[in-house]
Picture 1 (cartoon, rainbow, N blue to C red):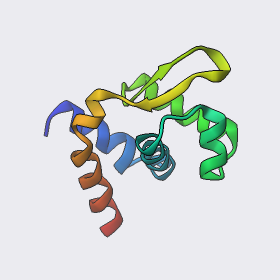
Picture 2 (cartoon, helix red, strand yellow):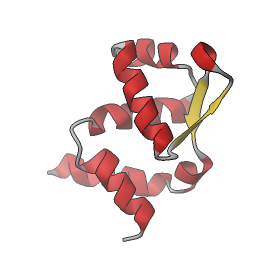
Picture 3 (tube, rainbow, N blue to C red):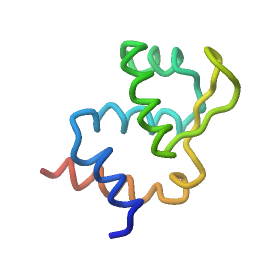
Length: 96
């Protein structure tokens, strides 16, 4: 297992926030959005979404365009290239 796969397992397979992070990533893969749009789309509190975006950004799973409030988030090129790994982790976690 390489370091990127281990990172995905840690963030999306074993932590309490994994379901929310997975929902954020799937929504961003469908369409880049800002934090407020994500919160509305997912029916989550804005501060919760911001927390998970910070975690995902710090781990290079999402990237941003723009500045401050209007920052638009999208799935990073690295994660896009490894999306199948993410889906595999989520499938295995769902079977538990």
